[in-house]
Image 1 (tube, rainbow, N blue to C red):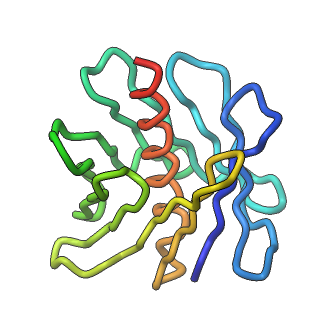
Image 2: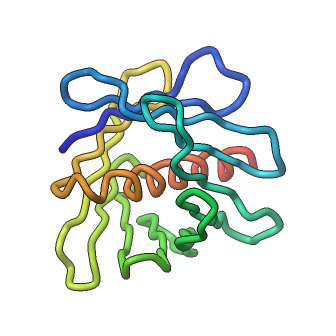
Length: 158
């Protein structure tokens, strides 16, 4: 399964539309006014599915993830000099990026690839392709991609 993650051009807060391979919008992400990033994920019908909330006053970016109101884990950026690394306390997954912070691989505890995230260049807004072999992982992978993009924005603003 592939998802196309596109940031909206005219938006005061972080807002994204997420499309499947056929071009159908499957998720909408709405940024909410708060301290730090707060991203609410809605399905195609507009029903809320999950939330990614940035935890403020931390040395490195850290985000809590919720399915509905239930906390499912967090993702935090680790201090590294070259390749970006994120630690997840959810599903035993790990995230590692490339030197330019354009591509990320999510692996499980056994080293098997869960998803591959790649940033498409030459777009006006941030655009990522999420390649997810198991469609059941789509929502969690989307939450991780949103947190990574928000972490990059937070670092750019510091």
